[in-house]
Image 1: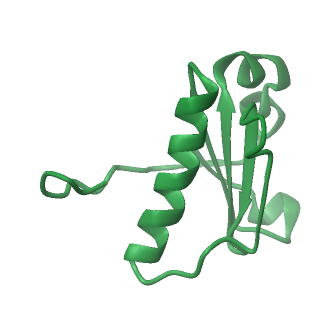
Image 2 (image 1 turned 90 degrees about the vertical axis):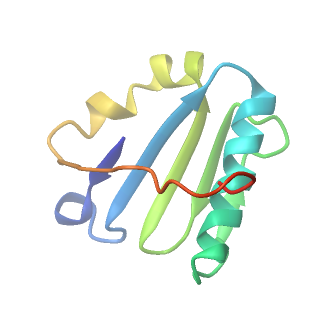
Length: 101
């Protein structure tokens, strides 16, 4: 889910919210996001928090923030509902060749 929070928050344009069933998957998502952003010519994150236990990894890229969370944490914190008045931006994955992200 990608939420346009710029009008409400003012310090960031978007939140990317995703979840996975295990800490290993959350960590893999975070690593893949950083790798993909860099592969597309972007800078690495300004800061990353939560990688040690990978229950909720927060990656600040300046213009957008990625929240990669365990499914149980996402259900508990309900960020989707907290920011429900924000724009829900259309998102579609970039399809690459085998071995790509």
